[in-house]
Length: 282
Image (cartoon, rainbow, N blue to C red; front, side):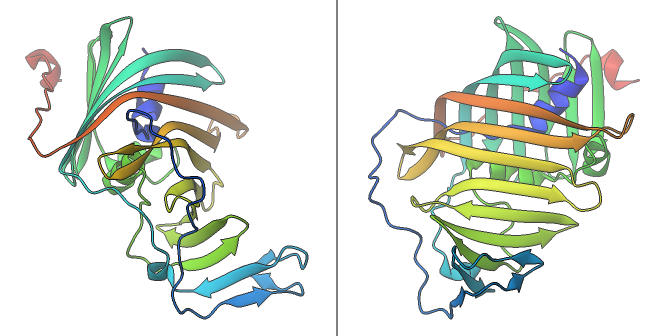
């Protein structure tokens, strides 16, 4: 189980699942209450993008609070998923156990054929990886971790993506009505963020674009089902398009997640992370 696979899997693992229930397909779009909406027609340029007159788009400036989004609240989360990973030089299917304490810890145990291959632990300040098969242990800051992908990654991004919430709630947004979606456009630390909010008032798609490198991370949620009083996507597709530092060519990695179990809990969970003493002294 090689390091690039573990790093990418841990940094792009977005999951949720539950016992399937039928969703009301007639659910209305997220509502916008008493806001000023501009119909773009004929063609104009909005944020350097040409709006086609045959496809009118409603634009709302700085009105993200008016878009009502169904987001997940929890204390602890426990989940299991089957994850298929495919990159230009690797591909495999693994089982991933995930535990979370909101705003504090994310724990992942990655196994194959019932054998644990690696464990990852994320807190607000650091990332820890123990590769049990190779007998290797490393700690990283989020700056170090981000440099491995030429993409800014933080704990808050990982936590938000795992539970299907939009990652940036407080910074300024521009709201656009695009076909069946409300599109919330944001920018944070040289990352352009496009949040696509679907008919079920959930984040349907998230597109992160790194300025300068043009590396992209796309997350598509699907098969929404009920868990407690919340909607969770039963499957997730993560696509990472990135430029190689070695040959400067663009490559793509795809992670497909099928969830088998998710629980939202009030009872505290344990986060076992034991590393041999000899590796800690290195």
